[in-house]
Length: 604
Image (cartoon, rainbow, N blue to C red; front, side, top):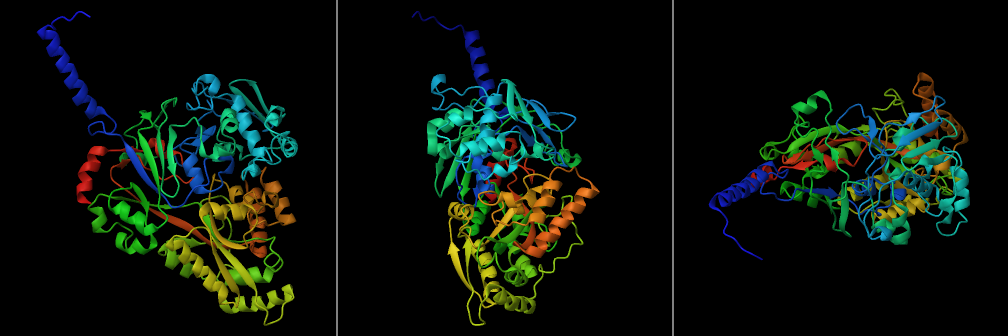
């Protein structure tokens, strides 16, 4: 190699360029402080089951996998009312006049993340095709997979139910080579879905985590370990998952790229939510979910500035919020922000209707419902900020009736004891025979235990003997799925803005392992559901929904408890945060201002 002296002018130019790159590059970097990685830290109150979309029936697994996998559609992040928009699809579906055929174009340039499962591609992720969508949907139907999400496609798509029946006896993956009339791909970028009858909720269904697209290579390569090796198309990929501790994601370097939304509500611009409009996403370099089962520990970490987002534990509510529902001075001085948002959800106590005691005695279920003091429950655990539930449909959805009155959804201990006398007759018991029940707990954090104990104490006032069975979150879900629970507390947040999403929880064919975990079956309810599910919103549909609600109220498969209101705190350095009821893939829009974070953490 021949070395030459660098001319002085060239040297000066080089120094200027280096300075400009370092100084200006830092000023314009997304992190905004010395090019530090942009990291988001979020608490997760429970362990997750894994990263398999076919099993995404609980909120926490849904949150975990939604950062890696993507469905065909998503909800527009900032817009209200909620609106579905293309994600892996290139455009909205073309729907035939008879509403039975949906033609969907697949977005160009979408690649699965690099992974060892793509052996023939030198471990480089290949491009997504319509056949991947068909494979993913067939997998939901595969009996051997035992997906919690089969209800979304049952009796909907031409030929898919027949595929499901064949899959039960199939060996290996050869069954996936069989055609399904209602799922075809005329070319690599076109998907055609043919329905047996109109399905007005289909577009909503195609936003759900159940319908996230997975590559066949990953299922075959990882086998039973597929749930621990997610291979998606999304903006993040799994770095590591430490059981009981944390789940860490990093940017997916092969992500196709996307942009921050340019449309929102009028107040979004005032709130600074459109400052990044049109900029490439994701902003984050790293995302960590910290498993924090105890609310007290989560709260201390938030107050220390170590996590960026938090709910308010019930025991800390008064120290955080004043009588006017505003932040107290100690938090306001740290420039923490408060969001108060009504959720579209219901909390309830479920009965296993196949249980020989609870399923047989209507009077017993009515007595248990009358024993719960909902106003006291709301005071003790929701700081008086929740709505008592009269039925299964929450406020904010068509079909919710604010005038509805449930005769078993109020506290009446004397009435409950009268019902217990009826229950003993139904069960053929003597007056001194003790009825024994087992109450299954979802987790072991303090607040959950206290809520469970509140319900158990109410039941024991009726002379019942109640065993309290504590489970981890995965254990609890497995027991419910296998119909081993008798009584348990639960909650359901809306997957999409339709009352059908709540009523399907009580539809007989959706029994466990489907989302009708109470295994409730009423022929008239099911007949009305089959009618309602194909109807567009109308007064006639609302009347059908009302009849279904009345049936559920009479039969008491659940104790209807509350509709919650969320109080959410975010650190000031967390930018672009807006609460969304229906989607959990919004972390790609969040940004951390590291400069602001450094300055504000001095106040902590």
